[in-house]
Amino acid sequence: MEGIRREKARGHELGRIRIREIQDNPYQPRTEFDEGALNGLISSIRENGLITPVTVRRNPSGGYILIAGERRIRALKALGRNWADAVILEADEIESRMISLIENIQREQLNVFEEAEGMKELLRASGITQEALSRKLGKNPSTIANRLRLLRLPADVRKVILDGNLTERHARALLKVEDDPEAQFRLAQRAADKSLTVKKLEALVEKEKENMILRKKKMKTILRDKRMFVNAVKDTVKKLTQAGLDVQFRVLETEEDVSVMVTYIKKQVNSSVGD
Image (cartoon, rainbow, N blue to C red; front, side, top):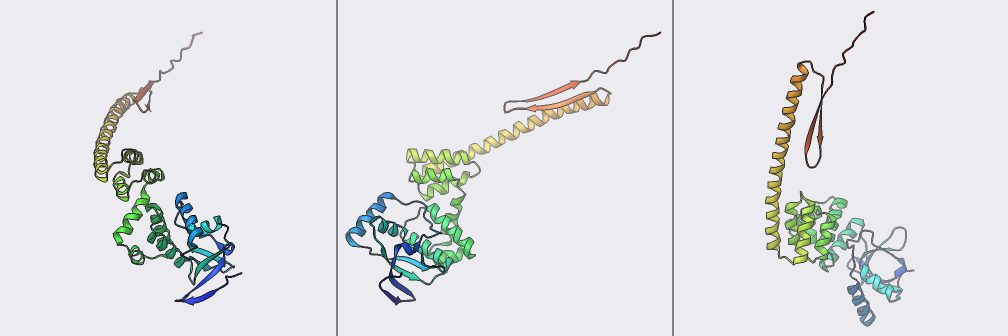
């Protein structure tokens, strides 16, 4: 049953609705909710009531779907409340996702990776361009592009960044060694453990890039030397074979060395005993 009051205002409705009729937002961009902040909100609602209504849209199959205000709903449930003041919007799924993302960004309730995931999903679902999204979110197009690039960081590196309270600039610095996920993790962990500034982390990243180049050069040298060694043996085996010898050739390679096994098959000499 719908709330006890409803009024039209600027194309949407304001009303009180039963909390049990509100379904969770299936596209909630937030993946983590701070327990301390939630407890603070519970205390605030207990003392002052719900100051900011939640935002919902009607579900065609009945009830409502939450657009914005999941923490407020959680707090109301924790207090044993049955009703919630709500703004009821006439919005489709794409509009709802946009509103949810904007609301969370404006309240600064998303970490940079949650924000980036929300942007990515919105771009995918709506088909709009990054430039159009930047206008809707009130952000510079380069900001959108930089946030989306952060999703190239592996999950374990993202976790270190968040747990270590590193910044978006720290995260962007680590993208410069994205060809080496192990190096990204190691550098992120060091930055978190040592509380490194962005400048110091960038210096470590540049040093790591130089080491990566040296390692690649060394690997090329090793591969070249290996080919020279193997080809030299191959040439010898080829000459022996052309000379009529039955020679077999096999390469055995481990992490530490390369072995070449050359096997000469002795011809069987048939002997017969005379009468």
